[in-house]
Length: 556
Image 1 (cartoon, rainbow, N blue to C red):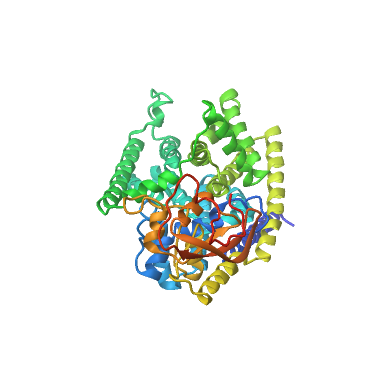
Image 2: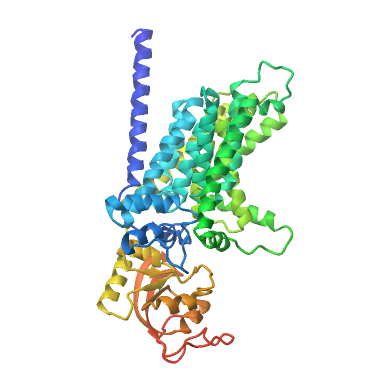
């Protein structure tokens, strides 16, 4: 066989292998879209995350209410839409075509996951070989963690999409003939990010890095050798683009805030920030403890890949600072617009969790995507270096592929064994209410909005109530809306019981099993019986079962 024929055969084999690889990625991606009504997989390390029976309903309740009950806003209840309107707006549009159902809401989230795959490939491919981009996508589609959280109708998948879209524009600004109008588009995208989830503010440094590093990398300052390396980061075009993006963001976000204030919804906006503010420790060094907690919690994503991402970042930082002249690969990677932005995006979100002092598994859905990009790009760059570093790259690649294979098996198992305990519990609960009328067909529950999304049973939230003069507490909300039913998980919170007791006696009537958390695996339904006159709270007199109640579960 001639040399030309050998090269042709090798090229054909490579194309065939790439085609098979793309098909495998596609198959795993499709798994995310199957059985969308199924439970968040049971018996996972992330079973403690309440998003699986609260957040889907909470953050889409405006869309659900608008379609089912004619008004998106319920005075005194939890109304997050003024602060995070983009997700419920998209759901509202979607429900015109699909009707209100949980499969459609989750399908929207999966659609954003698919967009994340495309945008990640578009971000990596122009500056790395095809296999690097496909490696990053492989890590994403095989990840059991992303499988679980990308199938929930929560805010993180869409926030990731908007961030990736903004980064794709930012790193291409120097190549665009008129970059300033595109930079304005980046500012608008950042407004959409802030209207998706307010924690997007912690992603701003990553976007700024992408803009300035992209112009520096492009070499627009190379003709002026007198410029210092520091000044080279502040090219005039980069500064114009950054300023334009800032103005566009300030104008669009300011316009939204002006509208919120003018319509009287600023209290709801502030309330969302209030409920996400957690108590900080009294020790002066608490940020260090919180940072370690948040950083260590990243192993929720993957016990192999996340430490590997940390190791690769550390290797790049140390090589670029300690042996800079000999490690040009590290210096180049460190100031790479995409790599640096991914590090800052992941680090920024971990900083958010540090500040909040309350990391939760779902928050890492965004961190995971950028860490997987970091792993792929690091391995790709190391593989281009000779000597021990290339061997290290091969070892990291082998470890990554083994982890991906193991993850793929777990993800396949999740996809092939769907369970429907929560959907069945919600439907059984609603059926019980319909078969046993008790005054107002209105349910009060922390999972009420989730149940409404599934069964269309009207509900109120007992955990969050926007404080207003008309509705200073849950008791006032109950007195106004006069619900007939209340549901809780496993046990009763004394504070909630106190509010209920001001106007009702409680009769436990049914239990419905759902999910796997030992503390949250049974929904307990109560009838609410109105009292002839309201009780008065005196100390903790209403925080335990009272005569007239029928309560079999513990109050704690």
